[in-house]
Length: 233
Length: 85
Image (cartoon, rainbow over all chains, first blue to last red; front, side, top):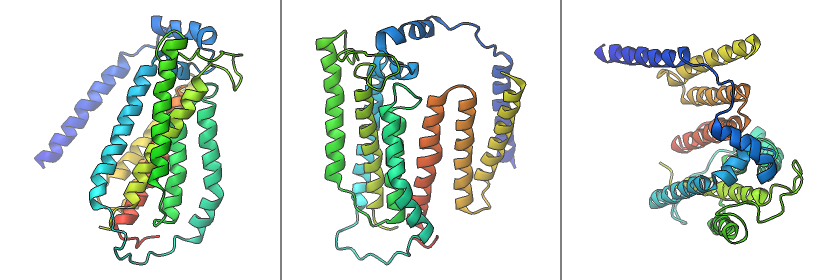
């Protein structure tokens, strides 16, 4: 009873805090200084039609490298922890029920389309909303559908690790190339900027975002594959 | 924001709260909870779209409502020994 009262009090307090925030909120009429700089300079300096992508990949590229590193560490730790309970190769496997006609046919139809959408999202990251992280997650959801249909499906860890490490090395390599050829780490102007709105524009951004997409997709897929290989509980 | 946008946002918010309560009720099937949690994420991504943040909306739709929901179902199938479907 006291616990329930405490929970209600806590909820009321949270509600009060949020109500105060809403009451004191007034939208800005103009962009602030940083946002104004991004809005004015992205088109001619970076050449990306999507300003969010220009900020994530170029202006704040180092933060993105940090995010990718965090995701890599997470995938590595998940793999390390789950490796303790990996199923032995000769362990008896009890028969699984068939996964159903709807799921099987749906997967067969949807997986190529989902993969295509994921690639589209990260290749067009500098033109349309979305980018490497979203595209990578979409790629991984295709892998997840495959695993849902056939839980005994085994995906080669060698392939995933090769994609992931190559992508990581290329990402850092392009960043270092930016120091050598252009203005600084992860500068996108190592390639010509091109015309605003074209697929081949914005310098190295499409390449960097494709690398990030592949890396994120490989990391999520490796987590899912490791999860699928654990012993039944 | 126009009144129509505010109305839609309010409708979304109320539906999200209802779905959130539905997801945390202890006396129901786990699969309903997972679906309700996925619904919260899906509606949140629509809300982000209304607030003119399509990049965030895409992340929320891909990870929050797509990957997480399917991952929960996958794990649920594993710990129950595959006796559902």
